[in-house]
Length: 51
Image (cartoon, rainbow, N blue to C red; front, top):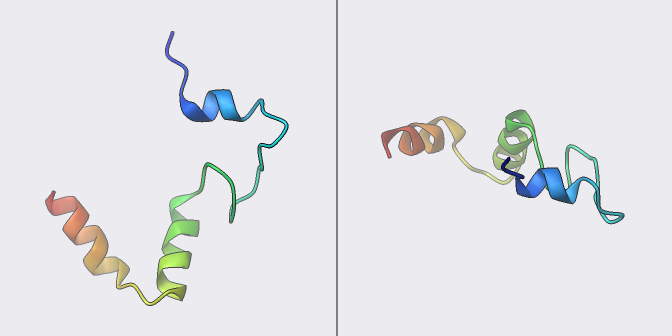
């Protein structure tokens, strides 16, 4: 069995289950943050895909 960091952390008293903070976020939340901070997400994801 393989335990991920999330699988362990979600049992912690300090774990925050929230879309905007915490240890696990949806891609839409990340995209929203990137746009709010001036990133060109189309360019960013294209460059990531090229890797």
